[in-house]
Image 1 (spheres, rainbow, N blue to C red):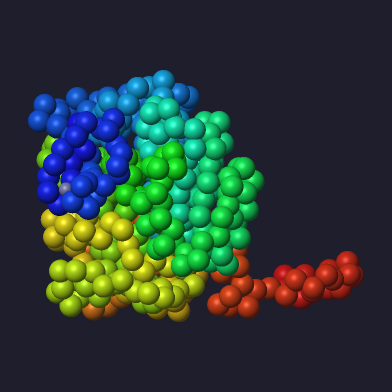
Image 2 (image 1 turned 45 degrees about the horizontal axis):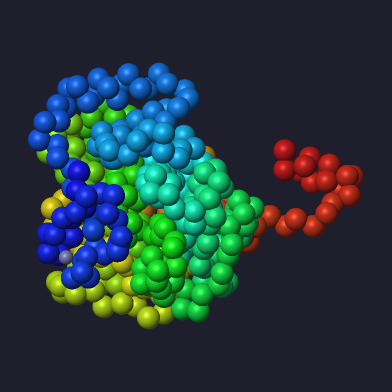
Length: 415
Ligand SMILES: *Cc1c(COP(=O)(O)O)cnc(C)c1O
Ligand SMILES: [Zn+2]
């Protein structure tokens, strides 16, 4: 495997991660040599690992090590058994969106509660293998809680930059509890990520934002595991929320690689859903433009996708072309309505995660997605990540303390 610049094609060994972007300014990506990969043998290998309950290959990411990071040594793998998330055939979601079938891939079931774990386990393993003692990231919340968890587990120091007041309570609580050092940054995620990209290496930090190409490799496991769960065939569409656009880039890369190897014989189409107030990528695609115009003041209640200048937009744009993808933007009201359907179905998710279902409904109503088509919607984060969001749209139950007698009387009246 090699690290290759997505702009000029210059290549280097995977150990030479720094500087984490090319001289020309382009992002790096991992390029594998799959010419000798044998789909039948890989399927048998992945199946054989399903019986494992401990060790790195029990992880839903490292089970697919040959497709993700074949070279990192097993002894350096830092894993919490991530991945292994449920894939649910959710009739209420299908009814809501108006399509034939909806599979929900519940990435909130990861150990820190979001899909960031799928990628972080690979980035942190590589950082630990390279001998770094301090891990750092800028984050809207979930990247921070994931990195803080893996750093604690590996016995490493963790620094995170967050937008003050812009992180959901559950995420910040987790990050602090895992022992990370938390700093507020003026200008929030968009400034923090650029600051670390520029100065992280000088400061001796191993930076785990999504321009770290190993995170992208790990996040591919979301679609690899889903394909495995479905017997190596996927629905017509993969639908997901887009913020920094790392996940769109990762899932597209994973799909194209699986097709090239012969693990799947058809690449699903991708739909990337942004929040209206933070939708620079959708605006670029919809206008047919070739350059992303950042949104200086991104606004949405879905804090995980409140990103105005997504670092991975070029990777995502390429994936969209190669997977015949589409984009759309949904309002916060539409996000919260979709969240209610997902929550009431018994699965549940945080607001940003519900953007996918809201977008699927919009695209089905507009005719882009057919009524008889099927979709896999990636639920990116757990319900409890952002408990305040549940109280916001619909007034929550009145939680005034009731005397036992009064409580019994009320219960009898609603029985
Ligand atoms: C990070 C995150 C996203 C956005 O993913 P990107 O790769 O930044 O586009 C969406 N939902 C949740 C819950 C997240 O944590
Ligand atoms: Zn380059």
